[in-house]
Length: 102
Image (cartoon, rainbow, N blue to C red; front, side):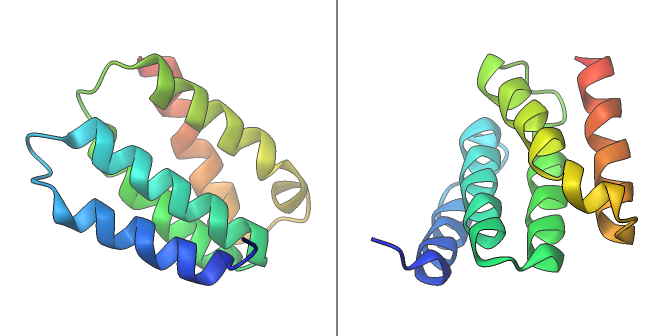
């Protein structure tokens, strides 16, 4: 309902509520949703932090949804990458490496 901060907090809580080794894809997608809420708020540092955690959980996961999420992330962050925002440049590189490896 427009409360992106609260939504991001709830997604972060959801991510920690499940065993990460059993539900790696779901935890990663919860973190992705939280990152998207941070993006809506314009909190780019939180976006990067959440996305890095999400990609950490994607290791070994083969999923169309995770690939689409990473592709969307690269697209969503393009405007920040063009400005040379450090955490975005690093995150974009990591996202591209993920897409090449899956």
